[in-house]
Length: 227
Image (tube, rainbow, N blue to C red; front, side):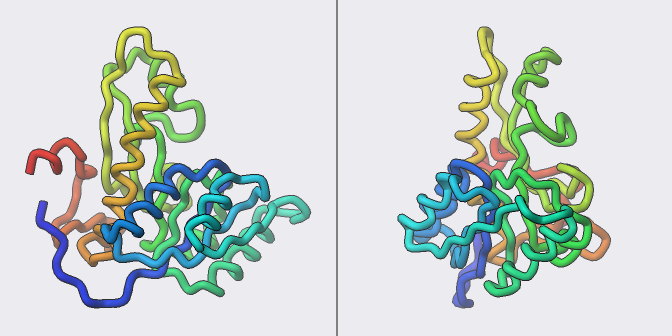
């Protein structure tokens, strides 16, 4: 893979949506603070006031907002309020980092080609929940994580980047999840960097382009490490 080109443009405005501990958020914060990510995380939004990721953001001096889904009569009305809140920060990229809400097609369409998610499986395998146990139950030899663009298909958007881990003898879901999470913390900042530096985009046909080439399969972290 080519290296990132020199870029003197302003950092990309990013909004991060969370519901929990925010470890992938922390990976992005760490990479930004280390000068590895040309982004400006303008806001971290959670649907839960007790999400520890809000503390992570506050510790880094990032503005936080809580928009609880409770009290909204419908998913559509919550997403309308969320879209209005996001517009206040004008993000060039919206990053879902453990945001445990299914987004409406209308919200997804507002950020088409500008919204990422990370999922703990080698998509298209195991969309949805309990991915680690499902991989174990299936007897898979490997498991992993996927960064993808968000569409209105649950965990079904165009895939960008994957990392793989072996399934080891004696693994349970917790041990397997911990190894996958380590890889998530590697691939999410990398995919965000590609996007922020203009190397990665989604075209009008829904194809992922990296360095001007169509990715018919997601990039693999192991291959990148060998380059």
